Length: 370
Image (cartoon, helix red, strand yellow):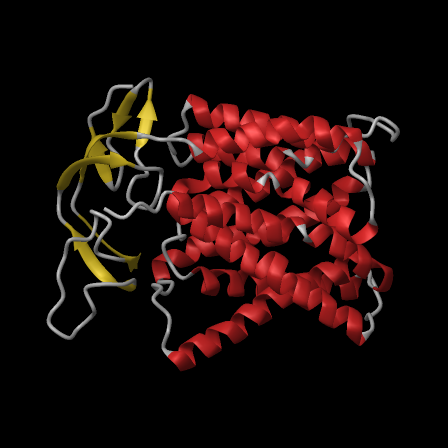
């Protein structure tokens, strides 16, 4: 069996690094563009850049990903509405009624919301180690964003910030349901739809069109910090589920501080050094998770990118049809299989744990004692 458990962790951290860079660079661009216009350009940059990449990939016949099907569209539509449309609107309205310090702390709730929704609605297995990791990283983010010098207050707006985070948590979990499909296509659609929506909103708010240099910079930033970043995020979702990916992604504010240091020569505050050990401990707990037990995979037919040396894809192809080695995608059948190996809640192991037992799920049924 190939050991690929490090790959989802690397994808999630890579996504956090690229996304963490967005805030300090966007701060530079805000001098020449309104906030809603800038958001629209960033989203459009992610969608347009990935669309061009898809065209190049198609010309080279280099894609090994499964395309979206009609059954995937409700998940995609729900993710776009919750995370690309409703969450930004709710957040913008709420920020007008919420002190900045309160909002900064409440925005850390997204990772917690993602985990809670993954557990309650999608029955994702989350053990004590993951809850500790989530708690440490969230606490580190709260310490990092603490600012006692600004105004505080609990209001309807504060509840709105929490609602926005919950909507992004819904987005993360809905996207996880289609993470087996082509992430470039998924993010292209999400970026273009969200970008066009924000552009219309900017027009309604009478924001001015920025200069060409600002437009180009914002779209490049969007391609890297939203486009490539979210593609990596989805690939992490594919390999370890929404709760773990969302928890690792929560280290992005720390990356933002590092980029701010490089760009603005702003030395990190004392709270950064206080929160850093907590963040590192949480990341270590999550990355070092090891879960293994005998389990039985039920018969299932589906399509996604895969290879034949991972103990889950033992089917064979006709001679000359598709190479037996390397990654490729096609509809394939999993026969009922019993085996034991370390695993995370990837697309083949999204079973449910409850009180030390594992209940039957859509894709698999298991016997287990913890």
